[in-house]
Structures are given as structure tokens and as C-alpha cells.
Length: 535
Ligand code: NOJ
Image 1 (cartoon, helix red, strand yellow):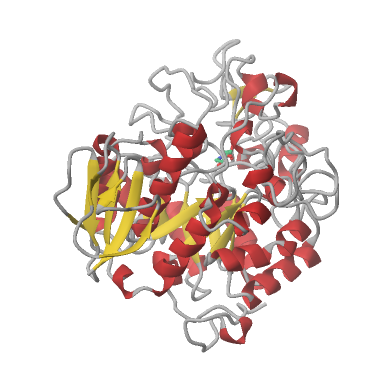
Image 2 (cartoon, protein in one colour):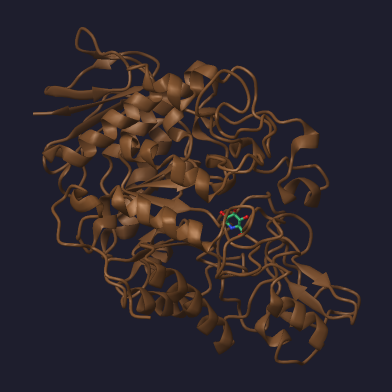
């Protein structure tokens, strides 16, 4: 099937109900991450799904996002909530079917919202037909050569690599061989030196591109290539989180991974206007830059904002490094405050009223920066992490760590839409896949829509300005002098952003206030707040 025609000849608005034509629309786009299980449940089983997303597209259009990133919705036994893919070219029945996906895509496009989806190249599910065939075929077979099966060292695994989710990265099968899984044992790693593996990835990409998707978020984009001989690495405990452990960690950021990205890019280049963003946990600026070379990814998440504390000392270098990493590449920076793998930033910044206040300021900081932005579902409501009871925990990290690490469920609780008690309009059932707490009536989309001072109103206003105000033009950033504990910068077309992370109010700079995260009176910006100004 030839690539579908996208990017009709319209102006900037979604005239004709279809996205605008620009080939590099993603450079300053606001992407909204839909964690599919938790966004909206359309069929009442307590788990989010594609019909749910479709029914809430109006909210996303009103919010003003440019594109979605939908997390994996492919057939999966859900050992890692969809990141264990049993068939990358179909839809998990819990989430819907292909016709439902096509309808969602068409409706999103009609609203001017682009749709990007997760691509999970590094591993499959252990239920994938390839892995089942590999188990059946035995050592030395072509079926095993799609994965990383090896003999052990006596009774020990082939090397000392740990799994990101705890325990060894190797599991032994009944005939004595071991297979590599950087994540859960239900997620066997593929061998990208096998031409069949990359060919299959390309087929998956074309399958979705032919249906009309606008691009991909590439899972573990710094994985895929493993060093020859699979040597031992610097011994380390894993934290239950993807992170950058530096060059001693042989599981990630191997030079061979770039050949895979070049193949991915060559497919995308056949579908004008499509893109890929990589989940690249690489903190060295020069190493990160390699992923966004001319013939590789268009964007790479820079996780420095996601991992920085709420202080000028932490956030300023986070920003300068993120900009330095892309400075000599064709890519813009790509900013992330929260995602489904890390504690939500309201909670990271102290939780409660303080966390919310800081998160409001952080939103203005993130949205003032030049480049692409990712907003995690619920960021726009100021959702915090939830203290879940032990028996509710579902993340494989909880079991794999012997209950030492609670995992990522706290930040994955379903989004509250309306009403005053669970499940707050998320589902027609009160029983949701992760329980929703009491007391969230004020957090719902409905309640916040009626409140001009809500987090959601702030996001709507900020996204509207970001989209329309001339002051946001240009990809440069000039640091301005700022009081202690504050950051101030100017964009080329005039936007000034001042963020006050000190304990006291500071004077407002010259200019007309466009938007502030807290009331600015008497020429002062209060502590833990941010303001946008223009000349
Ligand atoms: C990164 C994803 O964001 C995370 O949720 C998942 O567990 C791992 N990759 C493994 O696919």
C-alpha cells in the first residue's frame, strides 16, 4: 500500500478538520502522553481503552495539544502493561481493535491533532510467536537466533548483567540455555544483528504508517545493540528505573544502536511529515547528540528536567545541557517533566499545595523553553502520585524486587474526569485497574474547567499563548540576570520567562505580563511561581 497522503494544504488552523501541512511540525509541538490504561475507559471494565481516548479527544483539542503519544495498545499478556508486545501489528482486545484505532486516528486528525504511537523494538513478549518458536526449536536454531540465547558459565548465567526490574537479566530454559531480558523475564531481548529482526521492525512501522500515524515514540531507543561477546559490566544494583549508569553499563548506548536508528529513519523518510522521538537515557551531551544526527531520530527525550530538583542550581544546568546536547544537531530540544515511569512532578516538588504551586511554575518554565514538549496525562490537572496499598500494586518491579521497590504504579492512577467519587467519570465502573482515592472531586477535568485559577485553566491559557503569540518564535534562549534562586531567560522574539525558586518574592522584570502561575501584584513575583512577559 502506498503511504497515505497527509498534510493537506491548509493554513495553521485545523481548517478542513485536518492537520496543517508543515513537514517539521514536531519541532515546537506540544505532545500529550496518553497512558492508555489510565486515560479514559470507554467500555466499563475499569481499564482505559481506545474508545475512551476517542471520547475525550474534545478535551485534548480544548487543552490545545498538537499531538498524542499513545503508549502500547498491542496484544500483550501485560507483564509490563503493554511493553511486552505479543503482536506489534494488532490491537489488544482489552483496548479495542484495529477499526477502533482507525476511527480514533481519523477523529484526532479531524480535530487537528496528530497521533504518534509507541514502538517497542528492543524486546517482545514471551508470548510472541517468535519466542514460542525459539523455545520449541532448541539451541542453535534459526528461531533462537532472533533472540539472545546463550550457554551459561557452569550453573551461572552467561554474564553479570542485572535486569532493570531487579534480579539477573538472564533466565534459564529447560534445555539449559539462558536468554537475555534487560527488563522482565517476560520481555526477551531481540538480536538486532539478525536481519530478520530489523526487517520485522520495518514491517511494523509501515503497518502503522500506512494506516496514517504521524510517528513513533521509540521505547528504550538506547538499547537494541549489545556489545560483541556480551562481556560482564561494572557490577551495579538496579534501581527499578531506567537511568543512565554511565559507560560501565554495557546494556545500553552501544555504538551499534545508531545503525538501527538509521534504518528507522529511512522508513520514516518515505512518509513525509512523520517523525520519531527516542527514549534515550543517556545524560552525556555528546553521546545524546549522536541519536539526533541528520539521518537518525528527529527528537530525543532529554530527561534532565524530569530528574532535576526544584532549585535554580539544578534546573539551570538541566536546561543548558539539554540545549547544548542538540546545539550542533538538526534537532530541537525535547522537554519532559513527568512520564509513566517516574514519580509525578507535583509529588517530586514536595506534594500538597507546595508541590502544586511549584508544578504550576514548572509548567510555565517547560512551555517557555524552545523545542518540543511532552505533557503526561494528568500533568494538566496537577495530579500527584497516590499512596497505593500493597495489594493494589501491579508493576513487575514490586514482585521482582522482592517488595523492596514499590515500582511505578503511584504515577499511573487513572485520570479523574468528573463527579465527586471513584471513578470520577474515568469509567462507568467504580473499580478501576488501580484504585482512585477519595477526595479527588476538585481535581477533575469538570471541576477545573469551571475554575479560572485551576491548573487546567493555566495549561489551556499557556498552550493558547504558546501557539499564537509571536513572542514564542525562534529556537534560541538568552539567559538574563536574575535574583538568587531564580531563572530568567528571553526567546528571540521577545518572550521573557522568570521563575522564582527562592523563598521570597522578587521584583518583576520590565514588560507586559502575558501569564503568571500565581497572582503578581505590586510588581512582585511570589516564591515558587513563574511569569511570562513580553515587551
Ligand atoms: C520504557 C518504558 O517507558 C517502560 O514503561 C517500560 O517498562 C520499559 N521501557 C520496557 O519496555
